[in-house]
Image 1 (cartoon, rainbow, N blue to C red):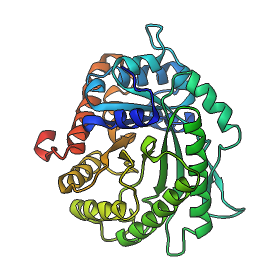
Image 2: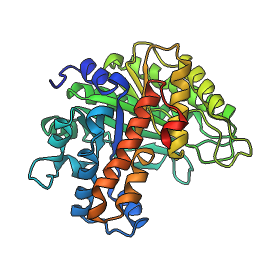
Image 3: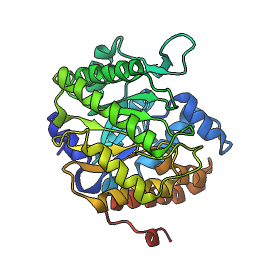
Length: 337
């Protein structure tokens, strides 16, 4: 039974430890991934790779939703059925990335603003007709001693809220993704400060535009040390600081928080999520919306070799189930052996 209302869809995606497979890589990004395994990024290879993921055994068990790129939402599988229907047949819901990437906030600026509000209502109308049940929009926030500016945060959070309202007006759940980028030498405390500020302003903007929070999902970064900082916060520190940040900025009525992995290793992304759920004490579901951290092992296993498709499916399924266990606070490193 496919959920119908915004609130039902949002809750369905994160029920019972389920999370999201982020398979919405743009043509340029998937080309880079394929180049790493010496595979040409043709439409057929992209279809074959994604179909392999969508038909994996763990889809029904561990994945509540799949974020797609425009091409994939329209693409047919090898048996002639639409890939979006393959996803539905596995009890998961198809979603769509609707932002159109980033541009400079101001000429010569290091800061970015996400584009895509022009024509968004019409695009969402079409995506609704094509069967998408949810949408995603990503804002990018860079951190340094003097970044981000207040203007960067406010303009990006306002765009996220504007997008969320348009998505809901077209019967689709919005996933709002304000990503504080890991790259940089900033401390974990600085990441906490910026993430908290962005989330407080985001929910202020969502409230102002009367977005239905119960029919919305949040896709934030975890509170981690900058990649170039000499001190890297421990698994427990990341878990504690992330929960502390979310509790001070995210309303209880939000049904779910699905973290981005943001360049973390597969194991770190799982361990951090598990540590947070072991702490507990919050009302939202804490789950995952991972791209590389779910796909990397499968991509390397497949490497364009059709005889390895089944082994690649098992690699993907293992990571999906590990993250499902983490979303229930039941993961342990010994399960990885």
